[in-house]
Image (cartoon, helix red, strand yellow):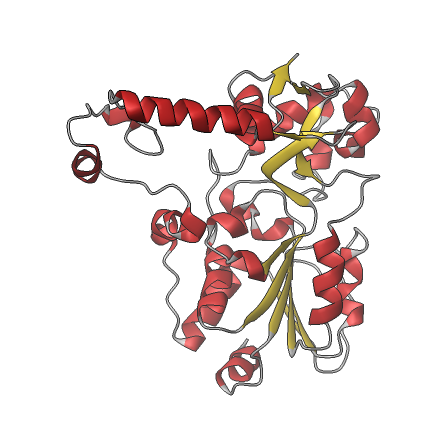
Length: 325
């Protein structure tokens, strides 16, 4: 650990690539995929799947979407799970200008919620912030999709072709985003350090990244999942504990309680306002204490109502609404 801290302190690691997997989110309460007994794939019996990976199979979702819908209801970002110390460590790397890129295999969205800038983040296996039909590929209103899944437990369907709609998670049989390939080709020659964190390196093509780089590599993982070559560092154990130790050596402070503040300022996300601030903004609007955060207030002004109607009509024209089955 001291050797890694020295690399960073001496300015020898200024363009860091991070490759991360489910192990960085277990501290948030999200199980990884492959740990015996506790991993997601070992606990899918309630879904009556023909094989564990079927839950992320696009053809299976077309015929039997209920299993993924149930899982998506549990995993939907920002409802239950919050960023871990490791996510906040990655945010500090970005803030200090040391982060070239994060390539995450996770679909939990916690890197985004931690405030990692969009241009520094590649979500290799997709995310829950948009959705489309698996048959005609028409986009659907993500808020409608979210409500259909998380509040009603139903499968959203397309208004154009009645096909099943799913969040833009990369399923088996689907291609990774073009952005992944484009940025990886650009980043590999520039990187001066690769951090591999919390991944079993079993899913290609992301698993091939460690073999592509020629810089020093550091593996934060419970198990030694890649061949350690000269100049590499293996840091065994829990990611959160190890990044806290590294941060201490570097004199950095990780404030996990700062999550809500960091999230609210990231890319114009909705700000969590207290009652007094919201009252100042909305004047005479009555405030419901239970709906202060992230709630649009009705305004009695007829002109603004007309504007809202026009805006919604425009949105309905541009975006495929979802249906429920």
